[in-house]
Image 1 (cartoon, one colour):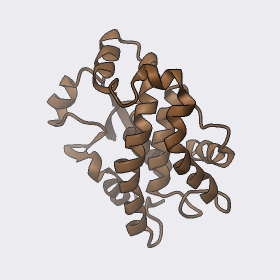
Image 2 (cartoon, rainbow, N blue to C red):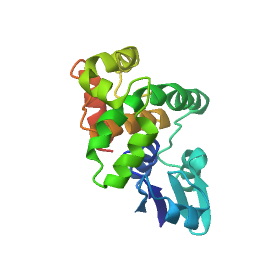
Image 3 (tube, rainbow, N blue to C red):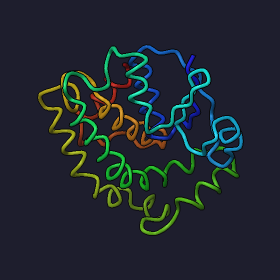
Length: 207
């Protein structure tokens, strides 16, 4: 059985979890508190999540999609000849989209953390200019505005298909799903202005 060191609200963890669900893989989650990575470091030698263990083999997050496609080729994360294009889109998601969405998510996510030490640690790292937690929570629409063009692209791209790239899910669908999962955990659903994107999120959630 696969073991996954996991944070529920991590976009990348949600991406990898959903890919394993899609492939019908059985796995066990090891929750990792944001402020206490001692077990994670002791058992994996790494300080980040997600991290997969398959028996004695460790799989870092950068290799997770390819590894899962090797151990469970069907259904694939890169259908047909889509791998090169989807990998570019995954890079955009991680390097651009997530970096801009996460400060918005973090401002609302802080209040969902029950452990006061974890909440303090989280705030110390993420509550900083530009866009402090108080500023984002006081004016959420204004804080969300820079993300509007990307959400509009997703909405338009779903006009003629059920998934973002092809008629079947790809690793890019799971990557964007991870970000919107984090938004949901923070108590902020997909805005009503994007009904096709909201329907897509529900569709991927059921996979």
